[in-house]
Length: 167
Image (cartoon, rainbow, N blue to C red; front, side, top):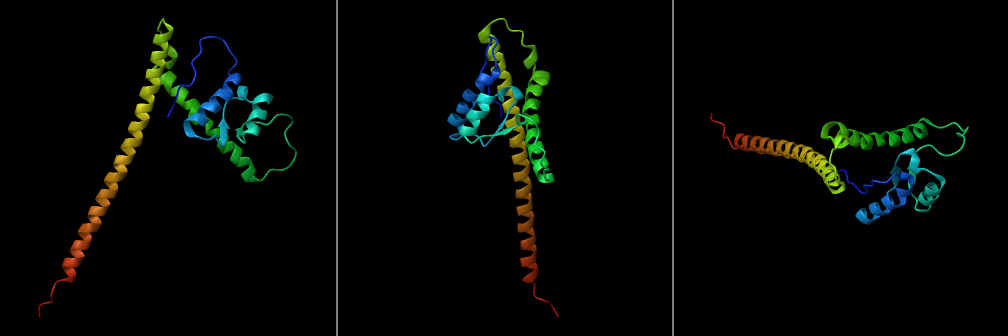
């Protein structure tokens, strides 16, 4: 699910928005995230220090030179998998821009543009819910069919066991 937290029309540095975004996450879910998937611009020294105080792990390159110690295959694979989760987030922006016209909004007024943006994210979330609902419906239909087949088989077996052999 996607959510618009901040729309700004003035030029600004996004890295200043990180604390507000994490605070909004805590207000919504009741706890801080375990892991932060963000662009490199968010990982300045001040934000890194603040995230460390909140025990939030960063998925990104550390500052300074790379370590010389040898990493196990698991230690190499885990950060890569975590970084790859970011592709889902970027893909959602791409979907909005390419499929739903998020990059082609031609509204003249600020409130109209914000309405268009909100509507596009609303439609993308509806489609996500529809896919989840369809998957759930297919799963439930399959389970119901499976339960019906088991019931019919048990009925056939019980009728078969009740047969009296004729000599």
